[in-house]
Each structure stands twice: as structure tokens, then as C-alpha cells.
Amino acid sequence: MAAGSSPPIDPKMVALEVQKGKSLEEIQRIFGIKMKSQVQDLYVRGLRQLGEIPQFDLPKAKERSTARSIDTGYRRSIGQSGSITLTRSLLIEKLGFQEGDVFQILRQGSDLILRKVD
Figure 1: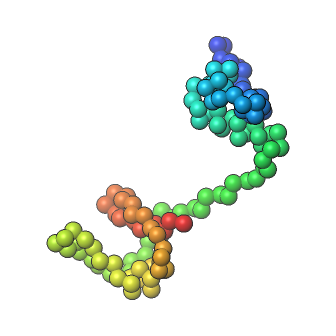
Figure 2: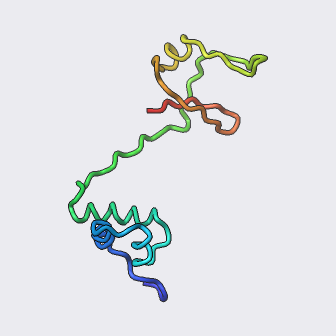
């Protein structure tokens, strides 16, 4: 522990104070915590340590290949209204989207990326 630093806060103690009905502001003052999000994090960790919520491993994020690209051979230009038409043939048959899929549009440098959102 560095000089002048306070000892680490026990998450179980924070969880017990919340269970006693103390407000976030009171808990911040008691433990010298600056941000409410820190109180919330300590509370959840404390509940896990107390066995109030089950331990579980978070699923690992899917690895996205930055080099993977598919040239569909389709070319589009921006029309007078400023829109681009993406046909059913392109979206569903070539790119594998399904009716009802939702995607976000990302810009990476000069590239536009359609990313399916779960």
C-alpha cells in the first residue's frame, strides 16, 4: 500500500450496508468512495462473495477478424436523394442477412461496415 492511500474497500461490507437500507450517498461518505458506479460495482461483488447471487463466467467476446472481407462484386452509388439501395439479393442471398435482422452502420476510415446487432 502506497503512502497516503487508504486500505481496499471490502465489497461484502458495502453489500451489507446496502442491505441495511443505507443510500448510495451515505455509503460513499462512509467508505470515501467518489463515484456511485464504484458503489454499485462493490455492491455486486459483495453480493457474489456473500453468496447472494451465483458466480458465473461471462461469455468471451467473439473474436472479430479485421482482415476478413468479402467482395460481392456489387457496386452502388449514392443517388440524388443521398440514399443507397441495397437489394434483397445482396443482403439476404449474398451477405446472409435474414428478414427482420437489425444492423448498425459503422465507419472505419473510408470504409462503411454493416454489423448485425443481436
